[in-house]
Amino acid sequence: MTFEIGLIGRIASTLGEGLTLTLELSASAIVLSAIWAVPVVLVLMSWRRAVAVAGRAYVEIVRNTPILVQMYFIFFGLSMAGYRLSGFTAGLIALTLQNGAYIAEIYRAGIQSISPRQTEAGLAIGMTPGAVFRIVVFPQALRRVLPPLANQGVVIIKDTSLVAVLSVAELTFQARLLADRTAAVYEIFLTLALLYLVLTTAFSALMRLVEWRLRIVQ
Amino acid sequence: MKAGTVRKTAVALAAAVLTFAALSGRAAAQASRLDEIVKRDKVIVATFGTAPPFCFTDEKGQLVGFDIDIAKLIAKYLLGDEKKIEFVTVTSEGRWPAVNSGRADFGIATTTIYPDRALRVAFTRPYIDSGISVLVRKDANVDSVAALNNAKFTLANLSNPQMIDRQKRFLPNVKVLTFDTPSAMFLAVKSGQATAMQMDSPVIDWYAANNSELKTLPENLGNIQGNAIFMKPGDFTLWLWLDTVVGELTAGSRYNDYTDVYKKWFGKNPPPPRFYSATK
Image: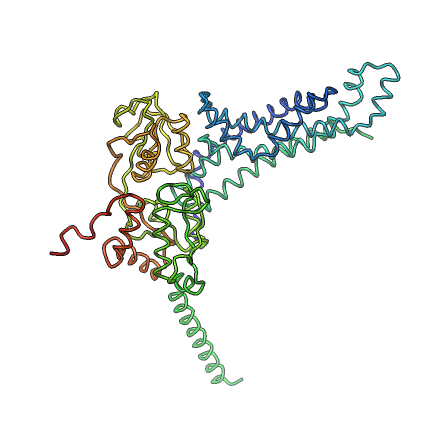
């Protein structure tokens, strides 16, 4: 087995282009998923049964089918129906739809983990339901959902690599092309793995910093 | 200890070391993957699962195609039974580590010989000619490569550098989409994400024959090429055996077997075994 360390220097600029696109895609997907999960969790926790059932159906369908298949449906399937989306857009939609469902469940768990007695107590002393949520439930739930949210963010960063199958020239795409050109698979895929490790570790560290800043000093 | 004894011991030690080195050297030279295959009684072959008509998966989930049949013939010649074979399906760039890591004995995956590839893997002589054809949607109203070379059209490439080099040379103005399997390229053309795709001529002809809304452009992109079996470099015994078998298939004692397989997948006879008339 040959291992040519100098090769990594020669491919750095191409990998750099891919890295930029991976960063754009990861950041957009994380932000959009976290936002999209808000209406989803509202629907899931609705008092109206029909609405809640519809929300549940959405979550189960997107959560229980592979994201790769969803990407193919959005990219190729919609194109057959006449809506031609770019690979980037199709990939971003698939990432948002799926991770939005996961994050909605994280939000729900966070909200439901706050004892209903606190809500009852708030209402009993004359707070409006809105104020109870804003002042009592939300600040506590936010702190509880941060660790699983950080987890989901890491999953999103890694899942952006799947968008390579839709001809999006992100990091994995560039690495595969380079590997095919040079047949230097060990050098290239090792570099690729390290780059993802750096990205995910940096993101985790950032989220832990946010957790630390929001901590409640006892 | 006397000086003589020391010297004798040293000589004996040196002789032992030398003998060991010589023996292990011989062992290394002799150990061919070919012996391992025979001992294992099964050939392990890397191939694609999505490149009709060379190597693809049929409705029953079975790997079929021209390359698959050639691989089965090789298993039959080597182990006496075409069923003594295991296929490992790989992606375009996954072909090289599949053989170089030892996961597969060799690969047969509609693989074109290029000098830069030959640096990292060893090729046999070609077992089939190949050119690059272009498959287009009929609704694009394109009849030539020149007409396709327009910014309003999109070309689907396979994720290998030869595709990109060819596109830059023959179709510099088109937009490009790049996929990791021929079936994804085909899906792009079929769904309208791409106007056309470039691929080995037999693959393109097969798609055109099976899809009435698609057609093949009359011109080829570039030179005639050779598709070959590839393996980890350095194992001369295995390479020689494989290369000999390819020679026997395409132009020698096994030409009948080759003709049967060729006719089965391409509906016509292969090129004759000799450029001159062999029988008078």
